[in-house]
Length: 286
Ligand code: C2E
Ligand code: MG
Ligand code: MG
Ligand code: MG
Image 1 (cartoon, rainbow, N blue to C red):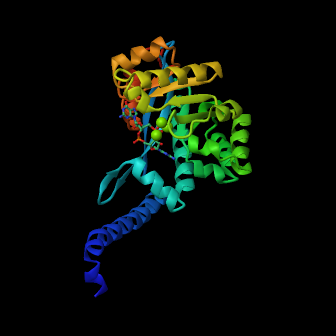
Image 2 (cartoon, helix red, strand yellow; image 1 turned 90 degrees about the vertical axis):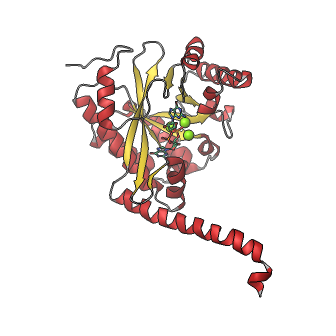
Image 3 (cartoon, rainbow, N blue to C red; image 1 turned 60 degrees about the vertical axis):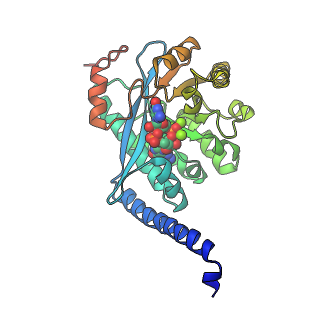
């Protein structure tokens, strides 16, 4: 029969593909539920300013623990959220939760200059996105400059009216726009010069190889120079070693983020961290 004449392909590929599709469906359904029930979490990673050693900002990163499978990495569940049309709900939740957390920490007397939230390119295709950001800021009595929105380069290529409208509305409002993972994908110099982006994040891949690879050094150096020439802040991500830190300091890289300083932490752990951090002028206000 047809099945046995195609045995190798059938038996090898089909069950795997079915399992994958089933897995995606199950994962998607569970994720949709988790977003609706707000059972996702945010963790927070400090960003350290080069000149002062103080806190430059904090990046909020989503975490999800599946009831059966346990923790699932964002690199896995963010694409699923995009595919099932749930990324807008996830983005709105992340914006609200991170903003409320920043407002709470400020009320508690912690000095935190800004909160960074990752927003999917897809969310910028939603004509109401800039208004959502304005509403969330107002709900939490925050100023636009308190919020940084990290976007990936792929979005920058897509210069449709809605996407550009959202980018310009946010910039006019005074929200900081940051280009995440810069140096990978389709980095376009003309685009970063044209769009109102105030911050560049040097991709972890270049930082990772700083001490071993001359070409990674050259790219990191060039990206930092480009940012500085365009009056942008440059944040290096994935700083893990003292050698990497020193290299970036020598280049005058504005801020650093990575395991060398701290892993992303649950809110309560971040509070302990900030109270104990003595790298700069981090003091409780009261
Ligand atoms: P990203 O925005 O580039 O975030 C940096 C990633 O590097 C995070 O991974 C962080 O935990 C990790 N990282 C930070 N320092 C180090 C280090 O020193 N060494 C190493 N090896 N890794 C470090 P994470 O949390 O797994 O997030 C992965 C990606 O998922 C993020 O990359 C971002 O693109 C996306 N993501 C995370 N949370 C959200 C969210 O709330 N919304 C959206 N749309 N995307 C998110
Ligand atoms: Mg990011
Ligand atoms: Mg990044
Ligand atoms: Mg990334």
